[in-house]
Image (cartoon, rainbow, N blue to C red; front, side, top):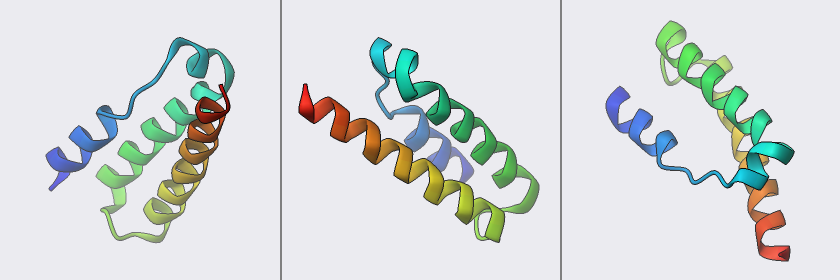
Length: 68
C-alpha cells in the first residue's frame, strides 16, 4: 500500500515554473505527507489534513497551468 501511494505522489508532474512559483509548497507538503504516513498511518487525522492541503495546492497549480 505504501509503495502504491509513494508511486502516485512521485508521478505528479512539476514544471520549472511550478517549482519557482508555488511548487515549493507542493514539495514541502509531499515530504510532510510521506513523513506523517510513516509515523501515523494513512487513516490518521493528520495524514488526511495534509493530504487535503496538498490537493488544494495541486488544484491551484493546475488552474495556473490551464490559464497559460
